[in-house]
Image (cartoon, rainbow over all chains, first blue to last red; front, side, top):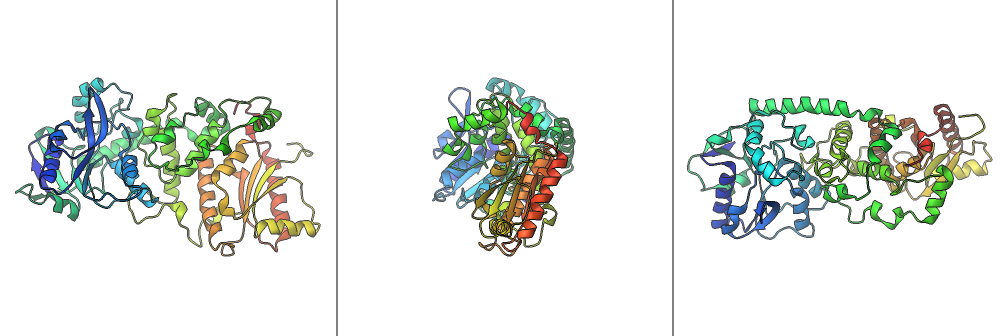
Length: 365
Length: 141
């Protein structure tokens, strides 16, 4: 893969790249994480190169899933002029799923991503993230587990952005001695043409990345085993989702939970007096808000195939239900059954949207 | 479950095949346990997994989805999608420690009145063996 090296930090390298793209009118705007106001981080669209100093694309925080944000921008029609998008691997995978579901369009987007070391939960205080940065990058290099990170990130094995046009090597690399930029696609190489004089060849595969994968896989197996979802049964489900206050925040931030008219927010799901009475006759008691277990199981059936394991849901849960971990575990099982990896390949259809004439005979009776 | 109380089964029957099959069983005066609460849907693929979960969590001992045999769908391919979704629901049931024997997918054509009776009888017998849906014991669901 064609690549070049810089002697700057990853953020500065990305800034240089984006400045080059903006100045040469190769892109009209930039989509990236920025530091806005005091201590606030948010995704932003930028056209003024003066504002590039604000962007912090590698800052380990995900205030929203960028895949969902890009879907919002491109749902009705594709962007008209080229936009450079800097995002994390899981966000890119979420976006690819949304494209398959016809919720986003990829035309005119240039994707810049990096091997990801994970992010801190949204609720982490921003200054404590800033203080932990040194530690974060040391661990990102070796793959050593960092407890403060999102649980989903600690167990993520898909931290290499296979579908990005331009990839920076961060996790698995020593970033103190400069940053290497890989041009994964012809498109990426075309956009960066003229930016550097000295191109070399570099592979995305390395033992360091494999080691990180191994460490995370081990962690995942442990965390999944501790979760014991197989033993839940109805009692376990009531126990864990009984904490749910039905705020639906997890579905609001979920990139692949995209329905405009959600069943769980529709009038169908309003429990009027007649429903209460039927329930009360049956059980002589009713939990209010009702149907929290149904809500989570229902969501699981809807996003089981497309869940990319970004961990936004756990982050926003006010009652600290480990939604993301449970969903990732269940989804992984479901996805494995159909040999489907969400966001990997645009051509590969979501399993519920296609079928084969002869299959799954074991589920019929 | 004691012999007298029948399990309750919520059945989603496709209008073109299984519901007609149930009708045939009726007009042929075939005997079967009165355990099924039929709900007619235009196609088995109309059944969102949420419907199955809703019935299950409302205390149904079993949930049956029945549609045309593969290849016979009135809408060409609806039942193939049903099968995939059902496989997904089953996997989720397995993973969360819920009993997959409580949900069932069967193909029953309009001419198979006897098969309809067999499916309902067999499913009812199985559910009798498994016992009551534990959801019923959860008061604050």
